[in-house]
Image (tube, rainbow, N blue to C red; front, side, top):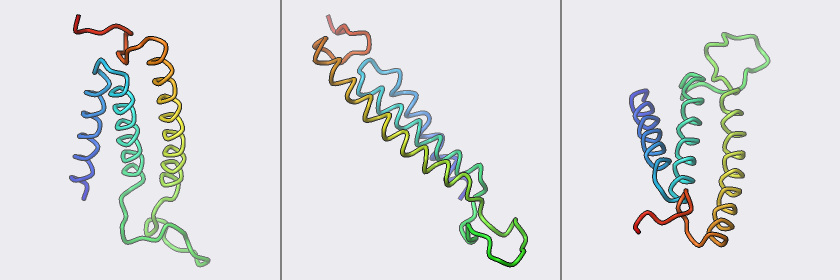
Length: 113
């Protein structure tokens, strides 16, 4: 399980970085989204992977190692909402920039000339 998760984080990070260095703004936005997904997976992984443990401690005092940590889950949920809003804002800025400049390149100039 840890190997699959670490591979997923690595692939998302590499793909996100590759897309960030592309010349078109939509590819940059997709790269930022992939990086945010990689960070979210990293935060979940930092909170210990437990698939067989409940996230809430009952009324009886028990061993805390037998329960999943709910803090990374709450942080990731908040990060998902914030990244969705940021992506929506970047798409609106992309559309406004394309309307003003007539191109969707990051530097505002077509590189094919």
